[in-house]
Amino acid sequence: MTTTCPGCGLELAAGTQGYERKFNASAECWAVFEEVLAKEFQSAALFGQVHQLTVDAFAVQHAGGRHPDKSVCIHLVGLHLNCGHPRFDPKYDDHPRERGWSSWTDDRD
Image 1 (cartoon, rainbow, N blue to C red):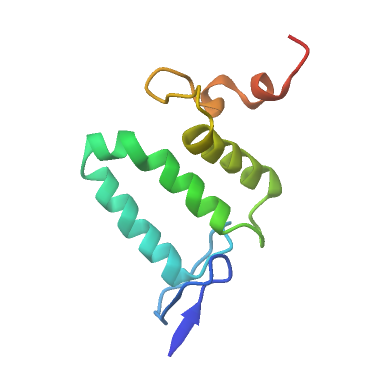
Image 2: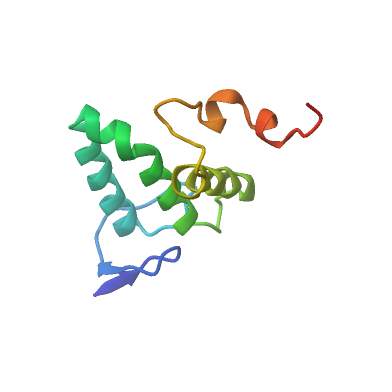
């Protein structure tokens, strides 16, 4: 028997564990995400290079359900800054979560 993740559509063999998180994901998809995180946590270099991208991508792929829209929005901004914003270099620039959301959305400066 298989299960389909409601967020990303991934089909995996049905497991026995439950899932009580905010992301619109199946328990099986969450388990795969945790495996990816475990690999990242084993290497400081890998963690520093890709962790925020991993979390942002998973969050956006699993929008809906109990996952608040404002959370999806900030993860979309993170993806934009990491992938599509030519001036942003995470080695030298603060991430919007570190500066505070209002500093990235307030045009009064």
